[in-house]
Every structure is written in C-alpha cells, then in structure tokens.
View (tube, rainbow, N blue to C red):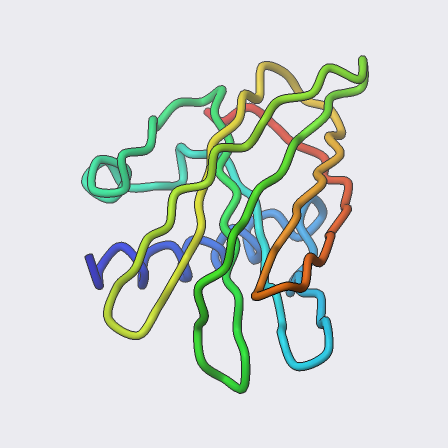
Length: 144
C-alpha cells in the first residue's frame, strides 16, 4: 500500500504539471495548526494496479478527489465528507475512504464526470471538535 500513497501523491503532482490550466499547482487550506491538502483528477491517470489496490473504478467518466490532513508536519486522521455539484445544481455525495499507509493518511472518493463542466466541491474536515469547510470550483474533463 506504500506504493499507492506514493502514486496518489505523484498523480496529484503530475496531473498538476500536465493540466496546469485546469488544476492549480498546490491546493491547500490552513485552519490554525491544521493544513488540508486537496486535489482532484480523472481516474484514468491511475495505473490499473493502483486503482485496483485502492478499490477505485478507472474510467474516463470517473473523477477522484484526494484529501490529506497535516498537523505539525504529521498526517492525522480526520472525518472527511463532502459533496460535488454540477451546473444544474445536481449534488453527488462523496463517499470518502481512508487509506492509511506507512507515514501517510489519505481520503479518496470518486464522482461522475460525464462531460466537460465546472463543478463545485464542498468538503468538510472534522478534526476533534473542529469542523472546517473547503469550497472550490474545478473545471473537469472526461478522460481519454
């Protein structure tokens, strides 16, 4: 599973490099001493064995959102939930799975990407008794 964490991090960074117009270089929000890193990309960027290990569907019409929570330079567990809304205001619940590996904790979820459009993400990250919210828009493209 260490390979999965490394790949997800690499995928986030390489997707950023390959689609600079569609994805900002570093996406993070800081809430006091907690930093939440987030990124979203098309699931076709995942290698088949990595997608299988993460129990993700690799498809041109499936996106992946990846969240990590860091406190004092150390990954921390959190309760992560959220929704993604399309231009018609149809909302999809993001069902996050926690992936814990050597020195890393990630939260990943999938959502449909049937066509090119801008989506609105609403992510809630609960650490202890604090609930922090991240809202962002992302232009998404179905994969090849």
